[in-house]
Length: 144
Image (cartoon, rainbow, N blue to C red; front, side, top):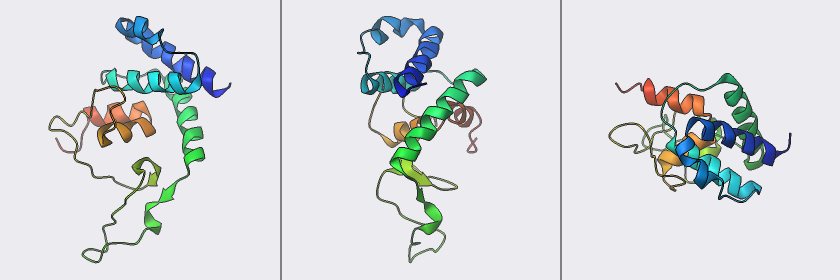
């Protein structure tokens, strides 16, 4: 399956779950960049409820291909801070990091950002990993 077809299939599943956005979704051109932006928007708007395993498999295939294209930076290979050898400061695309944990500002509700395609960290991290992880961590946050 080509990338555009993958993205469109994921969009159709999310639009079936959220029919109130179908008319807006149909306004997006049938090209990869626009459809990927629609997918990201729908992921932002989707409430934290369980996902179909087929959706997760298709999403994982798409995100794995995107990750391979961007490349991965291994957090263990980065130089630790002088203040604490257990800490590393990273300046760059946070979605490229392979790390055990990423600390970000988050919001007070620990639910991330629901503004479609907003450029904040609360959107960047969840949309480079699977929706299953995102919604699971929103529901079962270790901070509660």
